[in-house]
Length: 175
Image (cartoon, rainbow, N blue to C red; front, side, top):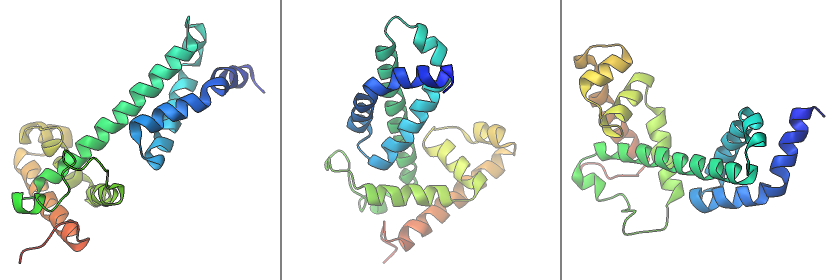
């Protein structure tokens, strides 16, 4: 075993259970927690020398766990906000997280899957517009197109997302 591997094991092994418990408490979804833990372990590996030299390596590692977990929750929240592209009557059909504290992970996962199924530029344009509140000019600059094309990408993405969510029966269609 290399010196770096041994150091990694010495730092992680004593607190691995605490790390997992902390991530699960924040993220609350086992699949997301696995992804977050993988990112944490990668981050720790990259910062191994700095962590080892830190006066309190355990605190440093736990701070990484907390920060990465909250980052993951913020990303998930931004993706969820992309559902706001729907009109108000369709939004009423989705569960209100402020009222219902139980997370409908299956429905939420289906919505995220629908978002990620959008064609590349359309999906990016929609997320930039809705989740990050970027102007069409800013979206155009990021995507390397005109503002008119960016507006078209957002419009097409909204329509396509609406169609997917209706097909998956996550929202009601027009009666």
